[in-house]
Image 1 (cartoon, one colour):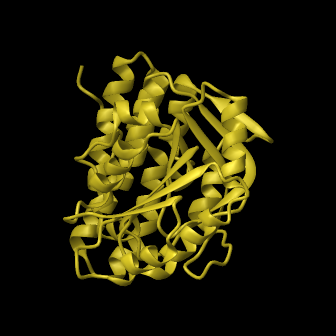
Image 2 (cartoon, rainbow, N blue to C red; image 1 turned 180 degrees about the vertical axis):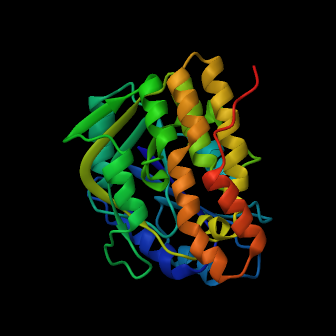
Image 3 (cartoon, rainbow, N blue to C red; image 1 turned 30 degrees about the vertical axis):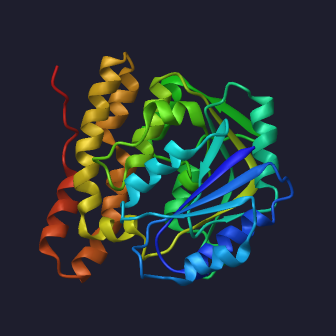
Length: 302
């Protein structure tokens, strides 16, 4: 079985599309658990939808209090019991062959810790789009391969620190490794990369596959998009990359440490946010983004 964990906060429309996409899987070796982080009294149509669904493969849980994104993610890890798990976005879509392909890849690569299947990007209305961010991921940062690629060690760390080309909600994770590491509760936006690097340092391998079976929804009202415009994302990222550089050095991975100090893709992302911050006339955000984008690489202390 594959544990599909779905942390939710928001209304029902996109959540229903996500749930329907799981129900439409061609391989029935899955179990869906929804963790609703809406406070009681808000969006009561959500629990009503799951009560009417009445499907034994689907479990619904409303948190007694709002946990926030990282704690709700951690709850997904803590409650998983199957060997592999997915933390699916509540606005994303699994194409019908997702579960079947993940099982095939896990069976072919029994030591895998992470599985990245093929992904396409959709907008808020469900249309397939090619954004600058995603085109850069594929053409500049993602390794070039056809079929299936296995990566591990410093090679994988360098690749992700130059530019995180993975799509977190589409990843299948080895549950035991996730439970051994967990999310960093101090992070609110970049917690996925932090977790992945921890798994890589522990020796975990990534299996990337080009079979398209997942749709990742990118829209402007997400937490990461709004925090990027205000500059909050990059204040967090600066401290994260400096800490990552120190850890890579201590682990004996000098190329990965250098990639962390430069964090080029994150700097480029900050540059793309400058026009929006200037349009909002937010001087503090413009200063944060400018310093982040053009500042020199910071050395870690020895």
